[in-house]
Structure formats: C-alpha cells, structure tokens
Length: 439
Image (cartoon, rainbow, N blue to C red; front, side):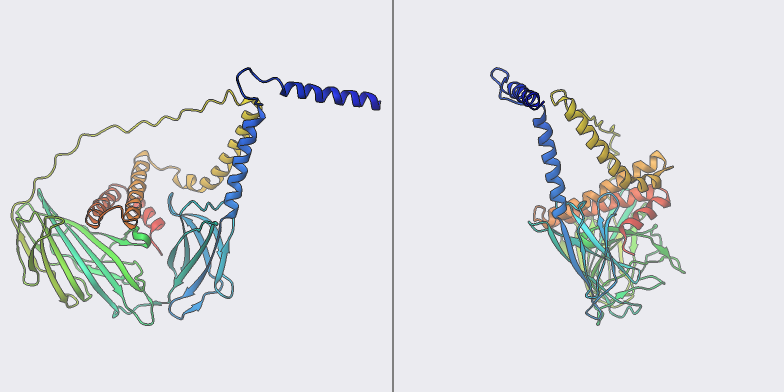
C-alpha cells in the first residue's frame, strides 16, 4: 500500500510537471490560474486599501469653547444625494473616530454634526497614509439680529427682450460675540422687492461654495419675503433672483433689506441703459463684464436701492434646436481566454458586488418608486447642474479659472439650476432642499 501510494504520488507529480513543462511554441508558459490569481490580488489590495482609511476628529462648541460630548457625527457622500456612509458618537472630550472598510481615501466625504437642529459640515481630507483629521465647530443659537450686517453686495440688472433679470448677491456677516448662529422662526434673512417683481428665488452658499436653494416664504405685506436658513458666525453668501416686465422699456429698482450695508455695486447691462439714482454714483464701465457700474456705500438698515432704468434692451436669443440625447452603449469585455474557473469566480464576485450595491441603493430606489419619467429627467438635470457647480468651484480653488470667468459661469449655472427646479413639481424642490440644505 505504501509503495502504491508513493507510486501514485510520483505519477501524479510527473503528470503535473509534464503538463506545465509543455508551453506553446513561441509563447511564454501560462496557465488558466494566472489571470484568476491576478484578479484576486487586485481585489484583496483594493480591500486592504479601503481598510487603511481612518477618520478621526473633534467637535467643539464655538460659543463656549468647550468640547461637545455625546454628539452624533455622520459621514456623508455628497455626490448621489448626501448618502450617510458611517456614523460615530463623540466621547467626553468631544472626540470621534470612524474606521470602516467601505471608506475609500480617494473619495471626497463630508462630516456632519446636527446641533440644536442646525447642521454643521466639515470636509474630510485624507493624507498619504489614508488618515483624515476633522474638526467641527458648532454654536449655540440666538434670535437677536443686531450683529447682522452686509459686508458687500452686488446687484446685476440685465434687460433682455421684454424681461429684465435682477440678481442680488450679499455677503452677510454675523459678528455676534460670543459667537452664535442666528435662527428665528419669523425668518432669518428678510427682504422686500419693488412693485412688479416676479416670484423670487433665493440661494445660500454652503460649505465649499455649494449652492443651496432655499424655500422662500411670502410675508404679510406685498413684496415681503424671508427664508429660514441659519446664519452662522462669519460670512454667509446669499443670492436673490427674480424677473420683472420690461415691455415698456422702463424699470424701477427699489428693493431693500433690514441690515446695514457697508458697500454695494450695481451692474447694468446693456450699458446703453440710462440710470437715474440718488444713492448710486456712476464709476464708468466695468472692464470685465462690459456693464455700466455704479456704487454706493454705508447704507442704513432699510434703505431702498433706488434706481430708475430706461432704454432699449438687447434682443432675446433664438431658441436652440432640440438635440437628441447621446446614446450610451456598454460593450462587454471578451472573457473567452480566461477560462471557466475565472469566469465563475468573476461572476460570483460580480453578484456579490451587485448585492452590496443593491442593499445600499434599495432605500433610494423605494423612494423613487412611482416617480414619473419627466420628474426623473428633471432630477437628473438638477444633479448634473449641482455637480457642474461643484467642479467649477474646485477648478477655481485650484487657480485654473480666473475670477471673472468663474463668477460669470457660476451665475449662469445657478440660473439654470433655479429654472430647472421651477419646471418640476414642488416635491422636486423640497427633495433637493432637504438633501442639500443644512437644517
């Protein structure tokens, strides 16, 4: 028996050895297991790379300058609707740590802490070793607006065809001491528009210049509006946009806000329009935009931005012909040379990945069930515009886009975003706001 076993073993080794020793002529020796091993190595290295990612940080109360214990911190994935990837809770020193295999150090995340119903965010930036240190500062709330002021403001007025478009951009400063976030059930940012102004849209600038469309609430009197966006210590960017009738080639700007304004600029296009104002003084033509430029300084709270405009508007551009959507085709990679074992292993791995993905996407799929094709198309357009603005902000931060072009393209993208939101049902706008607006 021992000899037979030995003989069988020798015979088996010889057969295997012989099989490996006969390569194809002119080709390197290779077995079916080679690509399969390579695939497993790639998969294991990917998993190992994910496991190295670690996020650690601390939550501090900016009002008391003390750590915040027991605070829930969520890790969000901005693209795809602010998905919650992981959750942690701070200890007695306000520290937290997130260490999960699903975290990819090559992906951009946001850390979020909701304190007194106000959301605070901080970007997660990994170093070369896959470790990220995050600091989140939260504040106590206050309802006194005496510390609010407008550090700078820009008003862009553009007459085109039978309409005139107005965009008002404010750098609102909350200089409260000790620092507090301004919240008020009656509205945080309030403003009044002149007679004849259309329904306004308001956008707040969030972390990393992300545009956050706001729900605008009409006030008790005609032309009065407000939003509920919490105004945190420091500078908050806000933009009010609306259209008005210009069929008579005349328009009176008389908007106002209840905050003092240190400096305001008025840009009017086309520059051939005549501007009559008691508060704005002409400083010539803006070299960057070609618009007529006027300025005003040290405006008291509630001062109307009084200016009468008249003249011929520019012609409306002809609508561009509709173009069909690009067809995207997915072509399978040839796998005939990989052999049956590799195919089976790859399919098993693919099914596992699909199951994991389906488990993550199932809540969102249930949420989207029953949505009409038109609404899905609008939602896709909204996400596309949102991502375009985020990409533009990143290019500007890297110094690849000059400031004049950056602001011009950003305003155009914002206008497209607001117009797209208006085309959809109210639920589309509310869904977008709930995903991108800090509470």
